[in-house]
Figure 1 (tube, rainbow, N blue to C red):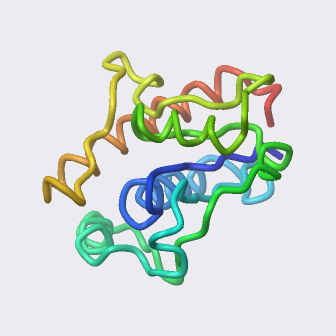
Figure 2 (figure 1 turned 90 degrees about the vertical axis):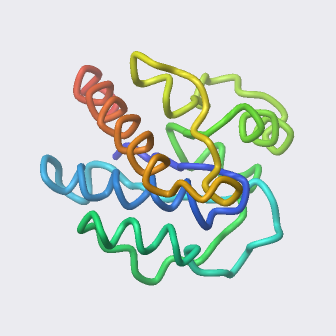
Length: 155
């Protein structure tokens, strides 16, 4: 089984959006026992809170269910439990490295690095553009899935 953890600052906007988009994409092609997908935060400020309503509304508008999710914090011990940690931006990358200390197995990646564009996914918490964040995250998740398909030894 391949374990993927999506990570952002608060785990109420971008990382849960990525979690549920990826779950939706994966269920169309794999068994639930092939790939385990979760999301978490690098900060503590939103722990226990549900997905931010505009992010939830955007997922719903696109036909992707996301019920029951509550923000959780990434822990150093998660490094051994997952095969990939997918962050949304450079700040998340810095913060995840602060939590893990290092990435000796090369498990940490930015989501848009799985596209031809690269770069950061802007935080819709600040700019209100949940539609643009969704589109960028969807592109990244489809690129990540292509990467996984090209490396089936990970499954």
